[in-house]
Amino acid sequence: MAIGKIVKGIGGFYYVDADDVIYECKARGNFRNKNQSPLVGDNVEFSINENAENRIEKIFERKNSLVRPPLANLDVLFIICSLVDPKINLQITDRLIAVAEYKNIEPVIVLTKTDLDGDYQKYIDIYEKAKIKAFVVDNTDFSGADEFKDLMSGKVCAFTGNTGVGKSTLLNNLFPELELETGETSKKLGRGKHTTRHSELYKLCGGYIADTPGFSSLDIQRYDKILKEDLPQCFREFREYLGDCRFNSCTHINDKGCAVCRALEEGKISPSRHSSYVAMYNEVKDIKEWQQK
Image 1 (tube, rainbow, N blue to C red):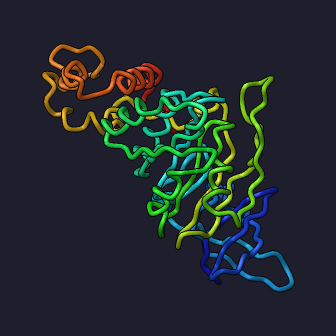
Image 2: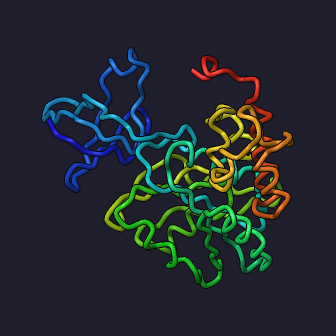
Image 3: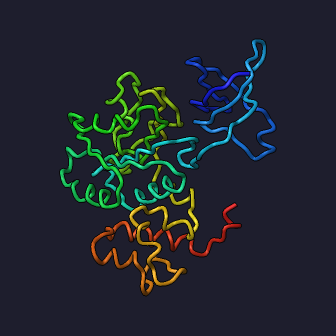
């Protein structure tokens, strides 16, 4: 038996990195009986068979996993947002941040295409106020790209975002040896072509970095719902106020005596972040815990 990490899964085959050797494996059939499916990022035990297929025998306990992108055991999620073509959608961005917080993954915002629109400081201010790291990258000379490279050292990281925001282009600039396929944004559809078709981990910076398939605005609404009881904790700028509300049942929307709403009125919480919270709350307010499973 050997132990390694799944770095790619495609067509029912899983590619496992063990001491810098990649093994092609199939998963044991009993995983399906347990309603388990191996994910890129899983740490696994596998058998090496010279005259037969290598087989994944065991999936070790995950510290977290995401449905979209389908990855396990992440430390950092880089959320790539472009200022134009497609324009940043704050609700989608905040939804991804909330999911990362819920899964105990550090969210980091990266703003791209600042050469096409220099009006990015308002977004930096929103996320700095929310105590979330935010970086800007110029697409012509990629100034700013190295500033967040240190955050990747020794970590398992993923780059995710709406289709066409420039994830693969950014990774190619940081790590030219990857030579990832990139594509222009479709003028007809107003969104990028899906140049990345599956999630894959690359061994870089003493850890692993994933490029992931892009998604449309509609896709993100179908995955990783957070129950209303857990949602306030997923907005980190709310946390210091949550114990100060007048009522324990406070929804933090427009309740009397709400400390979060008071902080919003005082400018300590950005209106766009609170609006994203309200939108997410309204989606899940009637969902019970047993319905999530």
